Length: 198
Image (cartoon, rainbow, N blue to C red; front, top):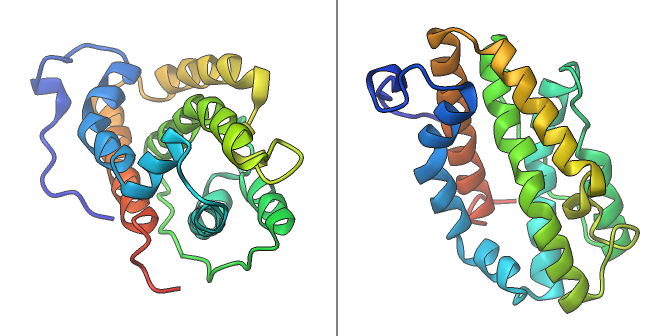
């Protein structure tokens, strides 16, 4: 995960803005690229088959094998690996080799990582509905990961944003958070493109 010479946001239109504004602006392009990946786009349209859905979950499992240990001590973070393991077990889909992740020691950078992960839960409800309609899977049968926090997703997202404002109150903290978030989006894009050997 690398991002070359990011432009500090405090010199741009979000100077003086909230941590959320900085993170959203900095990650917009990377987030859009991720959503355009063929199998993620197919998932959102309800056009992904069961076998490819299992492969996608296995790739998510590879990602979170490195991310969950990194973030497990963070305030309010809920590990995703158990959800993914339950889904893959239901599907009888094999696990792929886990990927390592260089965990930043910096608290602001970890906020950036969590921004990507916690934010993805917001779209999870839409994906969960698509998976239920097209693959007949739900929170207890193969779609626990996308179901996420269910009805608690909105309140948990707002609580995270409050935490982010406190943890990234300074300009340099916001910059470290946004850089980490962009790099994590790029890492997700690389892995979820499905081109990394298993």
